[in-house]
Image (cartoon, rainbow, N blue to C red; front, side, top):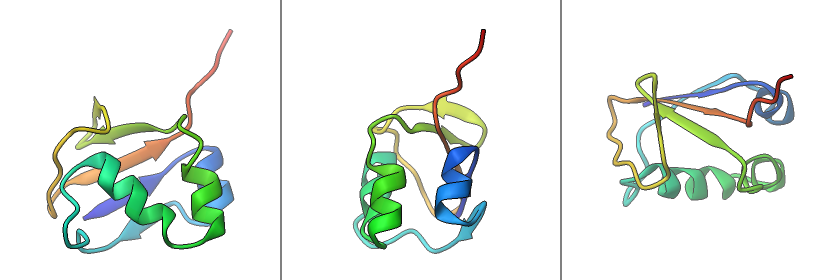
Amino acid sequence: MKVLFFGSLREQLGTGELNTALPDGVKTIGQLLQSLQSQGDAWKLALGTGNVLFAVNQDMVDENTAINDSDEVALFPPVTGG
C-alpha cells in the first residue's frame, strides 16, 4: 500500500510517502490512522488532531472506508481558502 502525506502533514512527518504492507487487522482508513499514530509522538501529533482528510485511489472518503493492500491512500490537512 502507498500512503501519501500532503501539506503540513508532510512537513510534520518529514516524509511525503510511505510504502508499506497493510498492518494485520487494519481494514479501514480509521484503523490505518490509528496504526500510523502508534509509530511515535510526531505521528500522533500530526495525525491525531481529528482534522485529517482522506482519499483512497483519488476519491475522498471517510474513516469507515474499507481499504486493501493495493490502494493508494492520501492524507492531508483541511484546506482553507478565501
